[in-house]
Length: 165
Image (cartoon, rainbow, N blue to C red):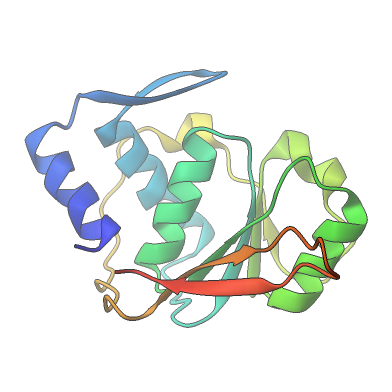
C-alpha cells in the first residue's frame, strides 16, 4: 500500500489521534493532513510536480512530515536534505538532484546555499488550521517516491531513487 493511501485511511478512522510531537507541540493526524493540504494549495498552488524533484530542508516534526506527504501527493520525488550537513554538501545535493522546488524551515534558511531554485518557507503554525482538500492523484506504486543520498565515504554522495511500494 502506498503511504499516502494509508495516511488517508488512518485520517478517516482516527482524525484526532496524536501521532507526532516535535519541539513546538503535539499534532493529530488531522493537523498533519491540514498542514499537508496547506502546502498543496498555498505553496504548491495546485501545481503538479509529477516526476519532478522537491528538496526538503526541515527540522524533524510536522514540517518534515507534511512536506514529505505533500511532495508525494503532488507526484514529486522527495529529496530530504540533512540539517547537520555542511553547506557544500547541501549544494552538491541541490546541484545533483536539480529540484524544481525547495521547502525549508525558516530557522534553517541560513544553512541553504544561494540558489535560483524557487524556495518556500511555509508557516506551519498557520498551516494546521482546516484547509479544503487539494485534488491529487494517487501515485503509482512503482513510481519514484524518494531520493536518498549515500554517505559519500568513497567519493561524492550519490542519490538513490526508491519507489512507493
